[in-house]
Image: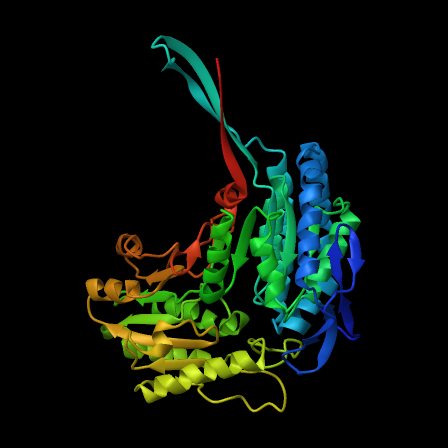
Length: 492
């Protein structure tokens, strides 16, 4: 498929709520959407109240049985049409993604491609048989006699799913969650991050044009925590699929537990990247530099902790310093830009605070560390912190920005121990030319994702973390099944 990614958004854009097949203004007014490159208002989004969120949940509850009972080939046709329309409208979707989120053209184009691919895959999943037959077996009746019985494990929709996505790729995140939920017969309520909801609003226009029935997908935009909280406590919502910070994820977990809601939580990360003495250092440097290049480090699975064998430490630092000089920071629409801004002034200040604390704790800043010289925009320089240890604030906490912290080690055992000494467990990375060694070390990492000699995620693999990085999985067949309940059906 060909995704068009050529022109910026010129006119101010408006996003409204979409509830039960109708567009409406939010009860709480309007929310300005800021271009993080220019700090200018580029649009506004409806500000939903808790009452609006409740209305969306009620609409989804009423519509879900009809969607579940629609013939699978008819549901698949709608999802396939959504995929085709995403490609057809990619020019606007990519431009909006770049404008309101600060993503570079390659990143925005990738998000659009993945969104289309998710719905195309969901269309195929809709018509697949997900039941699991079991072999006939002799069972004991209550009276002690035997009976030959058969059975099948069915997968049925959970019901209504609230999909809550962060600012670091809303088109990608919404599509991954909603496509799989809809494929399995669920209805959805989508709540994007308040910083960049306009692309998702355009995605909902595509939903309507593709023929998705009223109420099956509903859009709630808001910066009011009460709107999101309403979804976590509503009796009309059966499942929460949340991607975001660990702190908010804990709140979602606690609220959902009261109603026994099904939960998928992909939370924070502090990816450790182990670089051994026999590693391909050029490949390792390129992989680590993705922290600077991809979404300006605003990726929860990024390899932000570089754990480097002392024998190759200085060589790798030289390579990373050289790469940092080639990472051009600027407007996503400027020629040659490699890294755009971070999402907001508050996020920039948070990142800068961690760099300052690392300096105070004895780290050496080998690259970056100072704010780029721009009159406007929330830009952060690609930053490399050497001389770190695993107890520093900048090493233990998720910074969510273009900052790599480097911790040296001497033995395999020490490297693995440092990698696992973290509250997080989302992604881990290993670089070694000895693939057996890399595999053995990777198998000891307490992370839901393990990458050996690569930072490229295989598209059909599930995503998710251990420890404080969340629970459940998204993506692949495993992700599909998380949007279902298992039912054991037995007959004689």
